[in-house]
Length: 324
Length: 306
Picture 1 (cartoon, chains in turn brown, orange):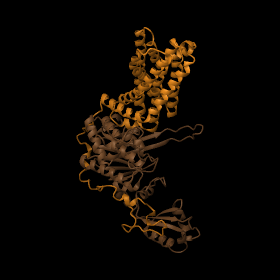
Picture 2 (cartoon, chains in turn purple, blue):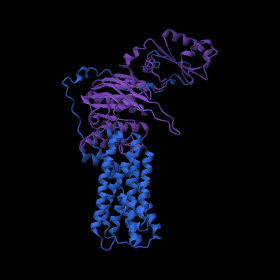
Picture 3 (cartoon, helix red, strand yellow):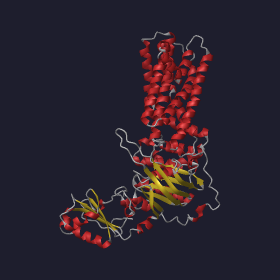
Picture 4 (tube, chains in turn orange, brown):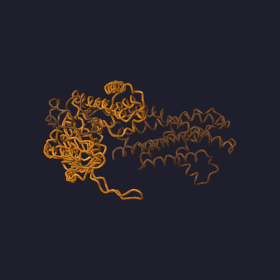
C-alpha cells in the first residue's frame, strides 16, 4: 500500500539574529523505512518534535524529502507529489483554510475540489455530516465551534470524496468521548466497506493502544520500533509501572524512599518507577506502611503501556506522551 | 492497556481525590473503537499488497479548472459575507471621507473627476490588494495552504477563485462611493455603467498583485505591510489630481495598475469621452491582471510544496 524507504529530511541550521537564538541543524526524519499494509490502521507515535508531522508531510507530497522514496499504491510520490492528492485524504493540524466557512459548505467545497460534481458532493456531504452527528451544526461557521467540534468538522471535510488512504494528523485533539467514538466508527466503517488504509499520527498512548493495528515509534526522526501494540508491550512485559504522588514533597528522610530516588522519573509531585514485579511489591509495601505513608497522596500500580515501551527503547523525551 | 481496578493489575492508593485520580478519562477511552483492531485482519490480507503486476492503482479524478474555480469562489464569497462586511464599510467610509475632505480643496472640473474616480477605485484597492495580500499571507504562514495542496485542484482555480471573490466583493462599495461622489461634486452619472468593466479589470489587476504579494512575502507581517503600502500608494497617487505632482511621483503613478482604472473611469465623466483611451486604459488593467494572476499562481505552486 505505502512503501517508505530510507526517507530523510534535514532542516538547515538557522543563524541567530537579534532576539532569536540560533538553532542547529535538525534531522527531522532520519532514514525512515516503513511498510504500511492495505486496510490497516497504522500509527506514528512519538513526542512533539519526533518528526511525525514531517514524515506525514513527506507522505502527502507536501514536502520533498532530501533522500529516499515514498510509493503509495504503486505511485512514486517523491517524483510526482501532485498524485498524492488523488490517492489520499489528509487532515492536517490547521483548519485556517476552512475556518470561516460553515460546516456544510466546508464539506461540500472540499468534495468539489476532490473532483466530485455538485450533486454527488452534496449527497456525500449530507451523508458524512449525518454519520458524524454534525447535521445540527451544518449551518454554523467552523470558527464559531468549540475546538473538538471544529476538529470533527474538518474530519468530515476530509471524508467527503472516497479515498483509499486517510492520513490523519492527531484527529481527535480536543474531542469529547462522543466525538472520538464518531471518528473511530467512521474510520472503521471505511476500512470494512472500502478497504481503506489509515495512517494516524498521535502522541496519545491510550488511543494508540486501542485503535492501532501496528505502530511505528518515532524518536528524534528515527523509527525506534515498529510492531503491533501488544507485540511492543511484550518487550517490557517483565516490568511493572509504579506511580507515586506525594502530598507536598517526597519523604527523603525515609531511607527506603531516598534509595529509590536515582531510579525515578520525577514530574512535580509525581514519581514514576519501572520495576520488576517483586521489587514493585516491596516498594508498595514500604510506602503504604510506616513513615512514608503520611507523605503519600496517591499511588498506582499498572502493567506497562506504550509510553513505557517508548522509554524502554531509549526514547529521549521524558514527558512527551500523553495518557488522556 | 492500563485499566484501573478493572483487571486486577492496578490498585489505587490512599487518595483524597478518589481512585480515579490518575486518569479520569480512561473509562471513556476503553470503547474508543467500535470494531476491535484485530477484527478486520482477515478481511485485509497483508500479502495482497505488493502489486505483483507492477501496475500502479488508478488515481482519483482531478478537479477540473472551472468547477473548482466556481467552488472556491462560492466558498470565499460566503466567507467574505461573514468576515468582511465591517471592513467593506470601513473601505467605503474611508473613500467617502476623502471625497468630503477634497471637496474643500477641489472645485469641480477635471480635478473633481480624478478625485471621484480615485476614491471609487480606492475601495477596490483596499479589499482586493490589501485584504487579499493579508489573507494569503496568513493562510501561507498558518499552514492553511496544505488543505488546498492535498486536494487535486489546479492552483489557478484557488488563486482565481479567491481573487475573484475579493474583487466582486468590492462592487457595492465602489458603486456607492461613485454615486456619492457624483452627487457631491455634481458630476454626470450617465456613464457610471463603465464601472461594470472597471471593477472586474481593476479588481483583477489589484487582486492579482495582492495575491502575489501575500504568497511571495516570506512572513505574514511583510504581506500585511506590502498590502498596506500598496493601498497607501493607490490612495495618494490615485486620489490626488496628477497635475500637481512632481515628475518622479507621476512616474510612480504610471507604474501603479490602479491608476489605469482611475483614468478610465475619470475619462467617462467628460462631455464626450474618448472611448479609445478608456479602452486603452482598461486593456492595461487587463494585461496587468493576467500577468499578476499568473505570477500569483506560480507563487501559490511554490508556496504549496515546500
